[in-house]
Length: 148
Image (cartoon, rainbow, N blue to C red; front, side, top):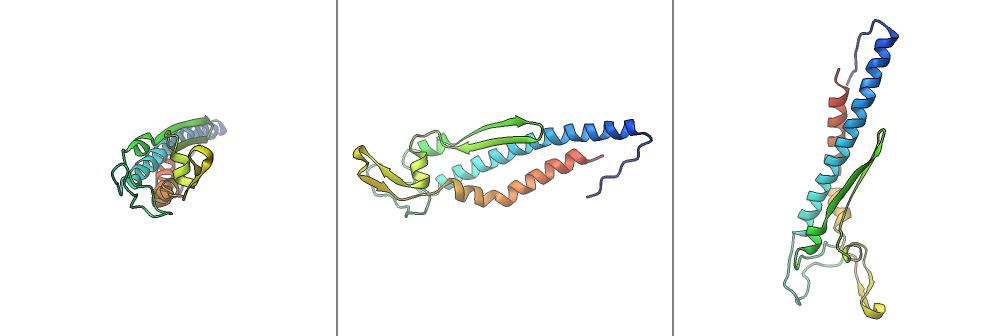
């Protein structure tokens, strides 16, 4: 992509660069928000891939996403942000359900920590499944911001 602009003075050059800087900042915020919502949707799809009834064995193997029982974990996936300023925008995507972390990473749980849950990652695989799309989202918003 080429950025070609004709200017007759330094004042015009500074004005154009200032306008493009502002446009890129707005585009970066927009891109981060779009990327976060795309990741949220992918995570919810991942969590809906299998289900089972209460008090029945889970059909998901260790290393696979957890199987849905009530849908609470899936409904708890939320976007926070974007927050930041001047091109340094960030957003987070994750669960608000208290057991979301132990499902992702595994660990000891229960009273006295007698039970060990194996990791059943759902965030990392979801992000990996849309990673190429996320790059394309940012490239698109930046490309539009730089159009003269």
